[in-house]
Length: 111
Length: 115
Image (cartoon, rainbow over all chains, first blue to last red; front, side, top):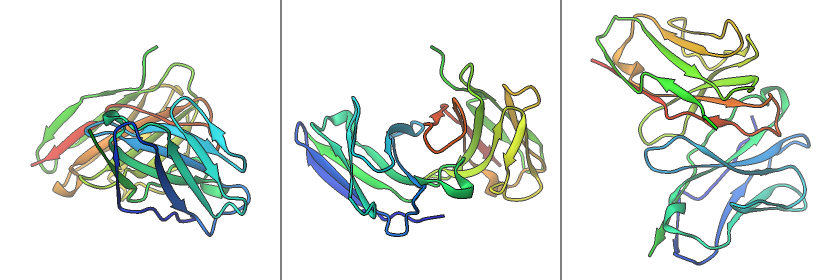
């Protein structure tokens, strides 16, 4: 499985934008980039996914580098409720069914 | 609408006993997944189904673990002869279909404690 690298932790202030980076230099052409987050004491929650183009939804934006070797999850205005572990996951190839979670980035949001 | 449900939410069992964990996916979701999560770690894939067919069981740790989804809806994860190292949160997820473009919806999990 292609591997992703994320910072262990990041901090932000409430109502400020947050850019969460993810490196995936071994990504293959058919791998989708997925982001999930896990709030304390809850199950993982889907955030966004993309293949090549940047994506926007009500929760966040996903910016994908032109060479697809990195991506950035953008929370436009962080709230206290966004404090969670954020996972960047590649899905594709023969193991396209499953999600392979790494360590993720622990996001702390300060009031 | 109703999300993924799991039962029981908490299970305490003695070492050597068998346990069965149930997952009820979102109605109409074809694909169902089982994960296990240790404290402080990300979820670890166990197995998944497409309809009633078990497509990938590569994550099941050993032959004490098995899963079924006989009618393509509810699934049961069974652990035989439980050991203390089996203690974890067991999470179920479902998706509309299998494939890289489909998001997975997770249930609340079953916290298993083996004493």
